[in-house]
Picture 1 (cartoon, rainbow over the protein chains, first blue to last red):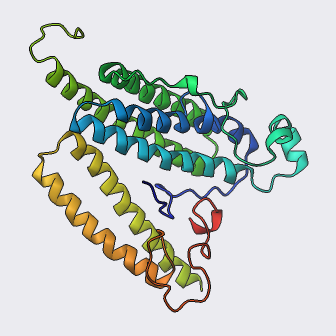
Picture 2: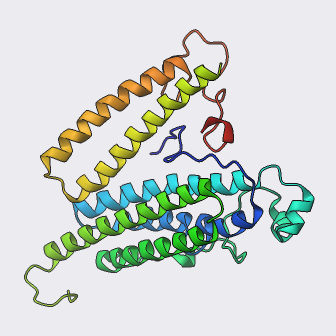
Picture 3: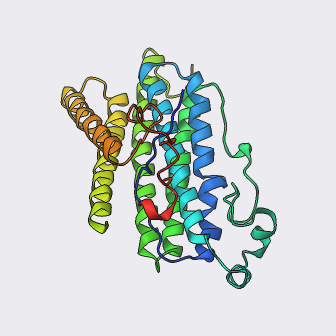
Length: 195
Length: 90
């Protein structure tokens, strides 16, 4: 089960509204390599994991991703709260505003609604953990692009740098879990992948 | 009043730091379950966090739903304090 802890994982205090940034950062909320994808991917894949380490790491990283989803939603919320209609129109946020107001909707930067095709669950630990390694790298790369786009606002950059760093840690832990799975499942097998 | 807010913020930051340290240790221990140094650090930080959470709850309000501090209260403490996504609490 889950219960809520009334804290963010990392403090967020955005002083200046910025609709342009909100438009791109929302991609890490509901885009293809975003935190909603990440949390659903790991929390769904965990049911198919074979050993103690891989079950634990998918459960716990999947849970941390929910905290990151909350952080990215908080960024979008604080960057847009209180925008005037003029500011919304000037930033081109009017197309988003039409359907979502200033709520936080899971979509990509290009406006595609969240889609679960952005994740896979194969029920095969090697396939799933290999996907997870790639997912962490894609999320890291996305955060780096967002950092490039957010250079003018240190309040935003600090948060994005923190989230980027967590992807690096998760990549390491998934690599360790994959090594463990391969050692246990294939210890009498001279090939890298065959069953 | 401002001093009170500063105390509250610094206690909250301390709690967030311990939460983070524990989470990172948990991920490490998931793939290194026999590292006794990390296990001992986890216990130490978890003990400290428990203490800080109780202190925060007594002074400012609950951080999780299983709080015990409202026995003599006539209004619902859980929703009284601001939520973490609101600008004022960070």
